Every structure is written in C-alpha cells, then in structure tokens.
Image 1 (cartoon, rainbow, N blue to C red):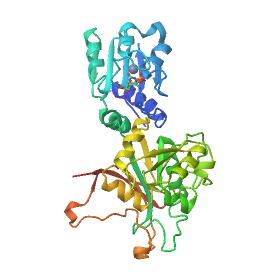
Image 2 (image 1 turned 120 degrees about the vertical axis):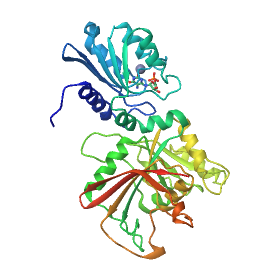
Image 3 (image 1 turned 90 degrees about the vertical axis):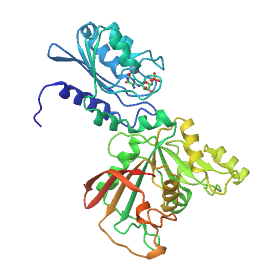
Image 4 (image 1 turned 180 degrees about the vertical axis):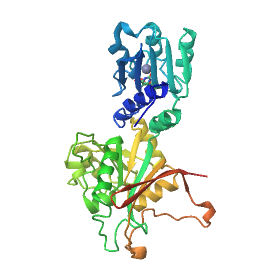
Length: 368
Ligand code: AOF
Ligand code: ZN
C-alpha cells in the first residue's frame, strides 16, 4: 500500500502497535506510541500487560536523551494519575517532548482530559482526534469496562442459514468450516473469559481453550450452572490450563459446591435462583477484573443474555446450509421474542466477512 508520510502515517503505526496486544492487557487499554524526531522514528512502544509500563514509557526509554524536541504519536491520551505506574504526561514533560498527537481521550474518570491539560500547561503542543474512530474501536472493551465495571460481552454463534446450532438429533459437528473455527480461536485469545451454559458442557465436554498453530492465551472458563450439574470429571475441571468459574444460585447443593471447590473451581453465588441472575453475574465477574467475555452459549443462554441486555457485540457465523427440524432443532437464540417486528433487537454498525464458504456478520445490538 502506498502511503504519504504525515501525522496519519505515524498514528497508524502507533495503532498497529496497540492492536497487536489486543487480548493481553486485561482491564487496561491497548495503547501504542511512536516518537519521531528529525525525520526518523526514535522510539516505539506498546502497553503489553497490566502493571507493566505504559506505551509512552517504553518509547521514551528507547529514545533516551534524544526525546527532547520530538513529536509523540499516542493512540490514547497520556495518563495523569499514579496507578501501577507514575503519570505518562509528567514523563513526556520531563523529557521535553515538543508535540503530542493524541488519537482519543481517556474515558477513565481518573484521567478524562487531565493528561492533555497537564501537557498544555507545560507548553507542550497537543492535538487530539486523529484517527479517533479507529482508536476508539480498538478499545471498545476498555471504554465499556472503565465506565460500567462490567465485562464487555461478545456473543459468537455458528449456525446454519436457518439459525440452527444443531440438527433435530443434536448433531452439531461441524457446522462451519475450518477457516471460521480458526477465527473463533483467535477470538478466544482476544477475550479474557469464555462463557457457556452447563448444558453445553454436559453435551460436548469441551475444553474451551485456544487452539491455534501459534502461541496464544487461554481464556478463563465461565459456566452458567444454576443447579451445579457440572461434573468434577469434566475437562473444564480436570484440565487446568485456565481458571474455571461456575455461576450458580443459592438453590444449588452446598455439598456439590464444596466438591467443585475442592477440585479447584471457583463458585460464585448469583442470586437466590431458580436461574442465575446474569446481571449480578456480570457484576461479580467485573469485580474479579474480567473486562471481556466471549459468549459461546447454547441458545438458552444466548437468549437469556440478550433479554438481560448484556450482549454488547455479536459475531454471527452462518454456514451455507439448511438443516430444518423445527422446534426439535435448537436455534441460536431461544427466548420469548417480541410481538412486533418493530420491537426486534437491531444490530448497528454491521459488517460482513467471509471465512471459506461461511458468512460472518458482526454488529452491535441496540436495546430500546
Ligand atoms: C497511558 N498509556 O499505555 C496506558 C494507559 O494501573 P495503571 O497504572 O497501568 O493505569 C491504568 C490506567 O492508565 C488505565 O485505566 C488507563 O486510564 C490508562 N492507561 N495510559 O498513558 C498507556 N495503558
Ligand atoms: Zn500512562
């Protein structure tokens, strides 16, 4: 691709650096920084993990004394608060960076414009908003979590064109192509947790891990199980590649709870029952610093999460197949539904992609 050397060029590079770390910063944002002076890049950095240095610090450390008089391109407003690390805006001032180009402001109430204000107070030239749409999207998880303290939930389904996730006999292997399934594993890497209903575990005994040909992260496994039907012999319990959290209710057997806990499972009480209070569950998971969830539920859990308005984004794979089977073949969304078409939940900002022969629709549900 031919590209003009301008502010946009360097910001795009900073965005790429940030994007590369998607899925590994937990409740923190992904951020990239590029430092430029006298026509050359003198430092680059990305925030890689919560508790470790911010993007600007890596770039400044790389540049050393050269940073004086340089321009910094940062995908997010430099911070102004003492968190796990001291404020980046102070460090930019101290290193006498001349100009800072910021893509978007930091929605964190601890920052929210004060990082930019601090830079300007110290006569650093600041411009804001370059490629902001792109940078905002990069941090849709962080932007949601920092204001709600609840995880951003991405629903993924794989169904036939008639919306079925299995045939009337329960056969579901495989609906979509290998290409689509590989992408699902990339999504698992990019989310902190994966969530399914206990029926899925009982039916398929899945591992719920990330299986790619390259190194990747396994998500925390979250299972909605109101009556604790999960067996301690299930692979999500016996295979210790990631933490397993079970969401249950006060109605569940205390003896079974103790048994699961003894096997290393974390059990969270989500209301009196009979069903898991999903809103409460999201609050509890948020308190455990889980900022993103990939929901791969069966139709029941998908429908319940949708009714509770807890799904923030959808990634819907459709295989070019029609299986039929009526009510006996499960749908990807099972819920009471609406009487009028006008009340249907609409997806906004939809996009279309193709994986092999499969079609993938992404979008953001709009709740009235
Ligand atoms: C930046 N550059 O690279 C990042 C920023 O707990 P801490 O100290 O890591 O602070 C986390 C907060 O700092 C986070 O909520 C967000 O507001 C900001 N993240 N800021 O200047 C970075 N990752
Ligand atoms: Zn910072």
